[in-house]
Amino acid sequence: MMKKTLLFLSYVFISIAAIAQQNQLSDSAEISVLTVGPGTSLNDAFGHSAFRIKDRIKGIDVVYGYGEYDFDAPNFYLKFAQGKLHYLISKTDFNRFYQIYNYYNRTVKEQVLNLNQTEKQRLYDYLINNYKPENRKYLYDFFFDNCATKIKDVANVALNDSITFYPPKNYQEATFRTLIQNNLNRNSWGSLGIDVALGSVIDRMATAEQHMFLPENIYVFFGNATIKNSNTPLVKESRVIYTKKELNQPNNFLTSPLFILGIIGLFIIYITYKDYTNNTRSKWLDIALFSMTGIIGILILLLWFATDHLGTHQNYNLLWAFALNIFMIGQLLKVQVSAWFKKYVKLLIILLCLLTLHWIIGVQVFAIGLIPLLLALFVRYLFLVKKL
Image (cartoon, rainbow, N blue to C red):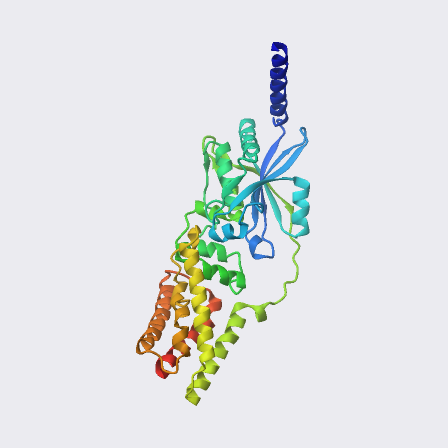
């Protein structure tokens, strides 16, 4: 019995030693940060960041990233909407990683980190441990805990928080919303959706280090960072692995929010003009407008109070998408509305004026695509006050 126990313990120790040896990097190993440029869809418009571990002697060339969805999570879409979805650290062979972004024509840049052998091993061991099934998940936050901020955090673990980040020469202070919109076409549906869904909390100034929630800013700040104790650059070599091929982009103005909502706004004003000249009221139009603004308002309230998304708080889009409008449908169907309803419509006009004030003084920036719709709502509400 004793002999079997000793044999078993010997096997365990040999296995542990073999695994430790397998994960031991050679002196020629390199650890670098990969920065992937934006893609064509909204979910990849901000790029991606990852670590590359390359050791030719050990035959290692893998990429660790923190941007993988946990599709096996129960109630995936509900948790995604609630801001309670866990993301995963991923591990990919570098050749496969490269082929994917080559196929999707996205620029890939690499920064080799200036680490000593101990720091390399510490960072690699951290990633190996983080990739274990029990450690892979983390609660994603777009601004403060995403694929880019994880790169900064893990690098700081490897260097015992000895990295000093300096703003680049062309650094400009900006709000979180500006940093997002700099990566988007302001006259796009994705941009409009972000401006409607996210509240005034993202219109505050981001600190220099908070700029690193975007992968491109990880690249810029890492390239300008130093290691405190030695005051040596954090990055010892930068190179471009793949350069995006510039393709002719179609002009999408005819399908843009400004054009589509402009047509809708003109249509609302035209119907309102016809109603005014004919001394009538198109109930169907009012029902449609109150239903639309009411439903959007309810969704904004849900994003604010029923989710864990921090960026959806204090959303003054409620000044035009007034949730109570959905409960006013009954009044609009009446031949003679209640006396208080005229005051309610006056309140809607005041709210639109407050929205304009919020926009001018910078409390919250709203989507430019909404301008035609907001003007049309203002005109329609003025007509209703006079007509009612």
